[in-house]
Image (cartoon, rainbow over all chains, first blue to last red; front, top):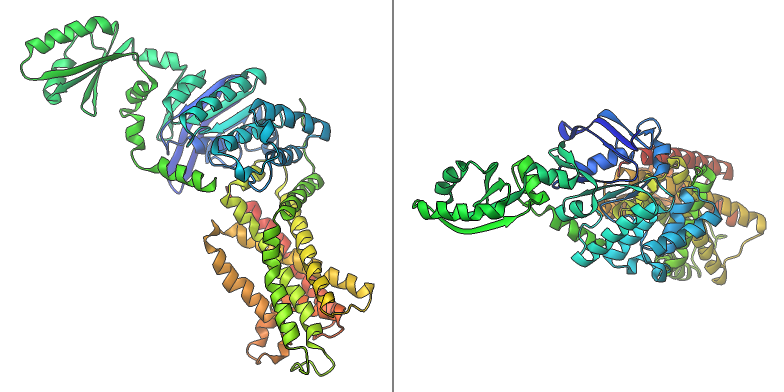
Length: 329
Length: 259
């Protein structure tokens, strides 16, 4: 049996469907990712699986417990790190961990031993007795991850674990996540809208868009779906170039976005000379640049949703939330 | 690793412990909350004390003596409401989520918060009483002190429950000043802190009668200076009912909170 089993899980808010009949399984010990733009329904899914929200329809089990009928059992067996900080910033790091451990019924001996263990894991030992208000954003995140692990959960939920952190801190958090997955054999389910985060951490991932799972596989397999390479062509005028490029027999898929035309093909390096010849022959348009790369998850996302995640983000949703986080810090 | 489920008493204790740690650390906040009752006590107590007969109380009652139970009631009101409404600050700072996903009963969470809040409110109420002793206030005997503590407890429990209920209905801290000005202050001013409620005109007096703090202040006067409008039994009865209803209401509304 899988450690998490989700079947047709649905959540509607006043007629708006945030999560739309999603089904997936997570295997014990894996790092599983939900990748999608803000508002895709990732956090709502997490909230249902962690018993904070009741699903409108469908069902799910976590560690074999029903999320509706065995809420306390589910709660005891999972750890959660929320998207927004959830620390008591007037207590010290150690006191926050101690509070958590007592709430989860750990006895004194286990509590003291475990606090040292998790502090060590996130390298916060020397800051343990500092009031959380004086922690940096990255330190708070680490403390929250440590707290999520306090009660030996079998599954750890991480909702946007590196949102609003700088690149270096983000790298560090990734290392902690990988090491706790290996050392403690904790199953991890994380949400993110950072492609490189999903790519680096997840063994399997689901791409979520408008409350639906549009693809689910390992990052490598997902990228393979697009086949070999991506050749990006910048041509002017692009509307003249597109019909010509679409007729190329070796191009598996031709897409245009933001004025760039992407060709998916095998052995892309051998296709560049062919494109040069087309450019010489055609007088209607001119190729300005050709860029060859391996497909990224960004391409995969584009393939399945018809847009890049940045385009979806567009607005200032993230900025707003980051501001909120900084204010709270 | 087997983790056993935390029982209700443990949950109450953990919530209480957190409140104590925060309280001991927040010295400036404690001084801030105690400043207002202290200044009232200090200025009005001394200002009206000499050669002044309080209307509605008779010449036997010294104004400082009359004022002290009222100020204690006021201290209990403000500290208890603050403790109850702190649910809202936990919501704002995200900590409420940490509490809500724990495998513990929400009733125990509310009871723990009440236990913590009552303890801190009681400490502050007693501090005001001690200050009053230095100003010349006298307590007849241990019995009257204990009776006063009982009334302080009831005021505390009731208004923390009330605070939790209000906080559970609010989305964020935006409306806090509304609550302060339109709920807490009227309760305080109508309770007869500064003068007997019989001095209010007839049309205003019913508002005093439905103000639970009126019975709290009266109960404190009953126990500390042996002067009152109502019998101690009535004061006790009204406050006990108020406390029970508020604890139930607070727990019920808190239970429905979504984070």
